[in-house]
Image (cartoon, rainbow over all chains, first blue to last red; front, top):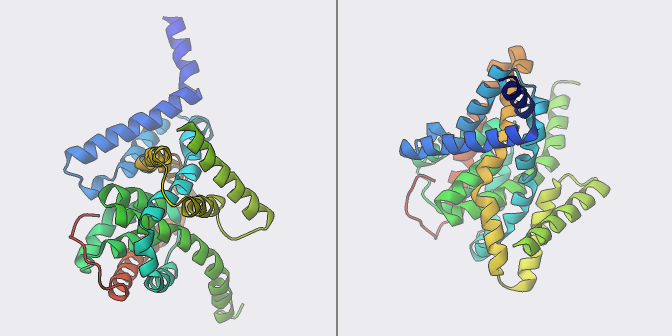
Amino acid sequence: MDSLQNTWVYLSASPLFHLTLTLVAFHVASALFEKMGRNPLLNPVLGAVLIVVAVLVLTGTEYGTYFEGAQFVHFLLGPATVALAVPLYRQWHRVRRSALAIAVSLLAGSLTAVLVIVTGILGAMLGPKVLDVAGVVDWRARGLAIGTASHGIGTARALQVNETAGAFSGLAMGLNALATALLLPLIWGGVVWLMGG
Amino acid sequence: MLGYLTLILVCQLAGEFITGALALPVPGPVLGLVFLFTFLMLRGHVPERLDQTADGLLRSMSLLFVPAGTGVILHFQLLGEALLPLGLALVVSTLVTIAVTGLLMQWLGKGERAEKTDG
């Protein structure tokens, strides 16, 4: 019995445990999402995060310990971003035809974008509804909007629904990163100036 | 499969190196995306194996945000009193961003219509 306990204590702090926990939590959350008719409020990323947080809190595990295992999943974000070149290439004829529209819409959107993960989940959850209410039916427009506001999390969702939307979402994500990086210092400078600093 | 995963990693590494060395305001992987895109332009088509590799990565992309998301939730208490105003700002700005960008794009990019959906 003691050795069972010891093995568990050892394993529960190992990278294998936390990597497995991340994957299992995601599968459970995804299954629930599918089962409930893809209800956007049951976004799989949010569901998985809540499951992982619950386990970490219950077992008193530090985020650093968890991340030793989760980093293998986290690492793949970089390669996945690079891989977005593939859907973008496939949809290039569409992208090129609407280059100006993309530039203007993105710039307008960039001006309002902030804190990443939260906007990502929010956008993936509520974005489609907002677009429906606003009457946006164009796949390119839907993708671009979701990608600008909700970067990878929104892009991941858009890719599952429609390839055109996914490609435009990935494109928007990349260009928005650039636009935000270039605009933020200017806007911040303006804010400081306005406040008399 | 492995060959194209290597190509993707090489693109990312080159992207990280150049953005780091030149202190460019773009994330390394985004520049890596540009490199892979350039490769595809030169190639003229998407090699089947690359397609499979990219598809594998992209289909599970949602999963990749779980570790970072967990960090955000666990560190929520650090935000303290700023939590409510920050939360409100996030909700409003996300929804406004989506509506503004989507409407502008649809209005400016008229022509192609698509069937309506939940995406």
